[in-house]
Image 1 (cartoon, rainbow, N blue to C red):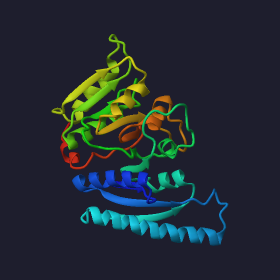
Image 2: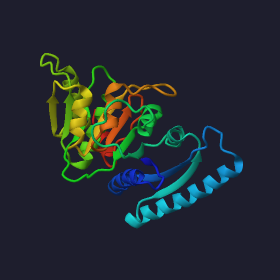
Image 3: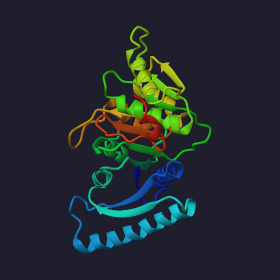
Length: 277
């Protein structure tokens, strides 16, 4: 699997890069560090753009040195692309297994910030997108996933099951319905997860809280929080209220899985899942 990481040298970018390095160290994933030169929708002149690209290339080399300094054995490369940052990053990640970006946003945010770049990327990317906040990863446990009505969360549940197995964690299925007479989404999610890994420890949590509030709360403690997103054939598709609120208020790494994504088994789990009917 290839992980594309948005790399610009910022503290937030380093959080995403460190997360990706840690994953690559255990799975053998390849890393591609993508540095985007913002051309202001084509408004930047030729000489200024050349200067920006030169600075971006120097920055990309510094990020490669950071990777080599942490884990010399990880296979990593870098690329510099030009365009609107999140659109260009989404395009650079097309065909990859994951795309990762960092964020400074941690904790409760009142209202909506439609300009948030992590929201923009998650909305346009056809690749599963992980948003990594600048926060401590210590003392965390479990891989959480939201169970939704219908099939929009099916790929997210499968992805979360593979990650939980890879990490040796319990899969925590969150069903924010609060109606004991309607357990179907949680039951469906548990069945999907068991089909991927029959021996995976699974915990189901039902809550009367709004879906976004339940997932935000879980993200404070989980190693990874996974959520599904309705797929689109092309271009932008609104994330929906739950995903938007979650990404604006996340307290740990959150991975958004488009329903149409052709998912690859996480790390070494690929071989074991191929034998599961």
